[in-house]
Image 1 (tube, rainbow, N blue to C red):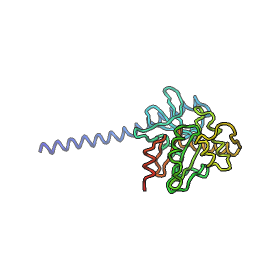
Image 2: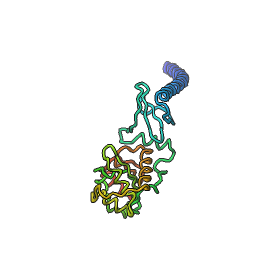
Image 3: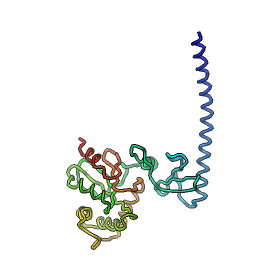
Image 4: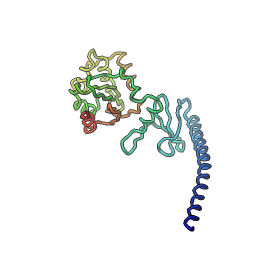
Length: 248
């Protein structure tokens, strides 16, 4: 009998707590919405004419994230600071890229691959964001070169201009070439320097398109690779690429 009474009392506590939880949930939701609105108002008051879309809490407490011209930005209302960057989970997944893909409604599967430089016709696909002067990009290219029978590469140039001020000129040279694949190999195998680089309006325009695609996906380092199974690889991770190529 005592056990029965105790169970009823405990159940009563759970029911009452559940009722309070509903009330608290409603209040919390309202408070959170109000907090978001205040943060947005402060952002717009301090950063006038900045395009803002999909404003909301970021994965880090105290920060807010939003889209501005297809770029993910982060805002700290407490410090009144605005910055661009990328947030990663402990397993190496870019939460910024995932969020961008969900907001833009297309993700990798919607990329305009016709804007990329295509090399190879193999059954496995790798989408690459690369810098012609990045040593890790050159090492990656050396590793996958000659695998055209099993691999199709879709290459988007993403020069890191702060680190490599002549990378954009080399990318334009490749995109302007009569045979871009040959020009790509010459540049990445360091067979060509800065003299005699081609330049054309079409190449510059195509590079601008490729850079915009990279920014849309949150690319900020090279090489950034998207494997055919949808997994993103930041940097030249030989083991992960080898595993992907060995899959049946």
